[in-house]
Image 1 (spheres, one colour):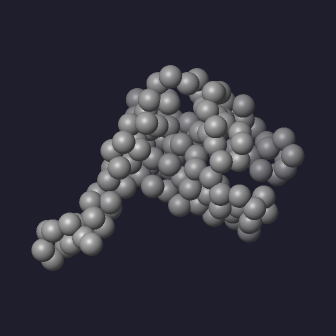
Image 2: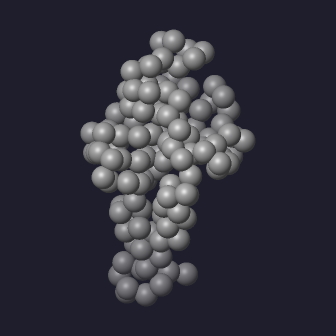
Length: 132
């Protein structure tokens, strides 16, 4: 699991974050949808939807990559991950709420919590031995 976060860190270090929907702006096709934080993409990357990897940029630039949000959208019929960069715990809650709606849901995987969860799955809690 450490390799996953390291690879995302490498992409963040070598690719520019482009904010095409600044905080407070409306979605270009759905004006009732207003972005609560800066939203954009990681230039020069590729996601499952054929576009660049999406990025939510929060209010704390010193924190770097804090996690990802995995989204499922039944309207667009897609699922993808979005990077959470510079997000405080409050920012993460705001992003989670943004992705909670009639057609979309999201689940956040925090960087530290994800590593701990994988360790619990891979090791038997009773014996401390690797799980089969």
